[in-house]
Image 1 (spheres, rainbow, N blue to C red):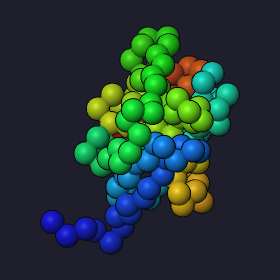
Image 2 (cartoon, helix red, strand yellow; image 1 turned 30 degrees about the vertical axis):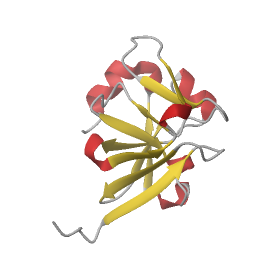
Image 3 (tube, helix red, strand yellow; image 1 turned 120 degrees about the horizontal axis):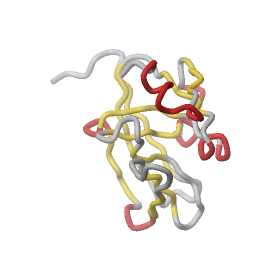
Length: 130
């Protein structure tokens, strides 16, 4: 199948570059800026992608996981540099959230940033389009 004109394949990873990924985005890149305790603390800027659009290229052995609260989200960090470049989010358990700030192209490829009230996750999720 030919790629659409608005399809972008972007690469990224952690600070020490042990963890590397590629992901395909279709259409505009809308990032979510969440104010929950963990996202606010680390400055995470979410780009949600379907599982089939994400590929871990290197570093599966460098990843360590962390779960809290409901235990649904699997937060993945590089065990060497501590950077969380992507994870499996509670909101999209069949996909991934990529940190726009960990893309090789940088967060400047993001078309828009939408605030997300993660402190009130259940109510905010109801208002979030899929």
